[in-house]
Amino acid sequence: MKVWKTVLATLAISGLVIGLAAAGVIYSGAYNVAATAKHWPITRWVLAEAVHQSVERRAADIQAPELGGQSQLLAGAANFDAMCSGCHEPPGANPSVAAQGMYPRPPSLAEAGEHMSASEIYWILKHGIKASGMPAWGGTHSDEDLWAMTAFVKQWPDMSKTDYDQMVASAGASGIGHHAGGHEHGHDDSPDDGHGDEHADDPGEADHHEPAGGNEAHPDGHDQPHAHDDANAHG
Image (cartoon, rainbow, N blue to C red; front, side):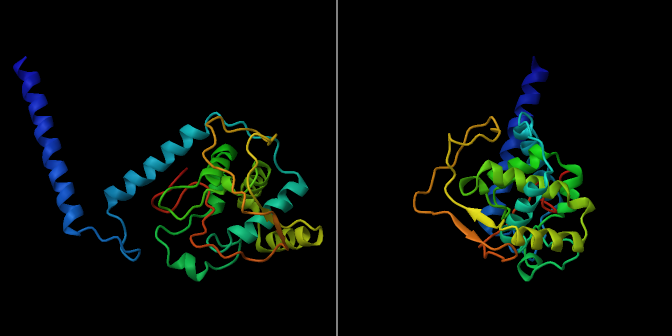
């Protein structure tokens, strides 16, 4: 009995010391939040592992539809080019000025397409990642749009610059462009992710169409599926 009391007392004291130390770091301003300063190794590991486990758990019950149809891939290419290319450089392209200044840096979509499941990519597209610059697109785009982008990302590992350019051009020539609008919850026949929808419709946002290839400005604009270099490492 004395041993258990000693263990509990030690844990309580250790927790108190750690809490006080953490409070000291926070309130002293010692932790540098600048994007030019990398996370401490322990911070990087905690964030990466938290993201990996969280996404894997929440995407586990999502059933992906059949992916890879030509029109679906062209729709995914058009949406990616408009929504995501400012942060995730297309195949063969250099990172944008914004992406070069971000930390964590936007992740490699070739790596995401190879190592992440379609359900995980879809979940991230729909719900985003906190404090990473990755938006939650589920409030402005339908599940059909998100699955199209998922299919496109899954093709990424084998995609060349020529392939990408041709897909975007074909999408434009076929009249397939980026479109977004209020997500009509409850009227979507696409697969549900089984975890409820946390997004409310925005009645003030109307559908709009843009030609593929136009880069839509985004304040934080990630579309990352899974993993940032540090906070979102997956696979």
